Length: 252
Image (cartoon, rainbow, N blue to C red; front, side):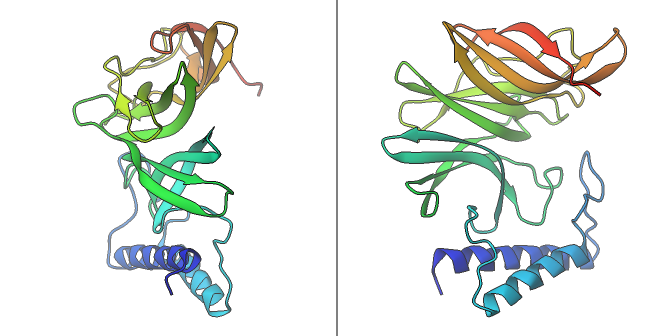
């Protein structure tokens, strides 16, 4: 069968079973940052593959109503509507793997009219060797300004230092990274450095008046030494040059 739901499910079965097989023969899950990720073990992966297979044999589609490329996992995404189409941009991961093992090197792109029937398009953005986003690209956020489209995303280097990067497009299909990348990284109020894991990810952009505001996940100093998880806020008039505004610490 070649219908999308069958292809999608069979691809997931193949990916899960293949990964379980690889682990069975000694390739222990782990990565630069995380060791033994939760749920990525031989029994878990094979059980999921078997459950999908048994569902297919009953005439059921376990992934019905869920979008993904066959064999690909999806996370951190955003929608943009244009001319009756919904454009979906998303982290393009791999079924059966966590990101430290197989980094997210592409931001995927698909379109739909009804959230049921999808057309998968070429990826929108990829990692770039020698640039800040050389390891991973995460969490796209797309908006329009003066007829041009702006995709903000988290660029991640080999040390897992995260910063806000930007690509622009005239048609939502072909994207070009700006030469100013990364366009934002936190100021001295945050323990940020290119040589270590540093939090500045998952940004969201909104406009208020004549300025744009960027909200993002980060960490902040509380007393010059200790740090806590925080939400940072920066602002810009042109979407290229950003200045710190403030940060706030969640309760607890």
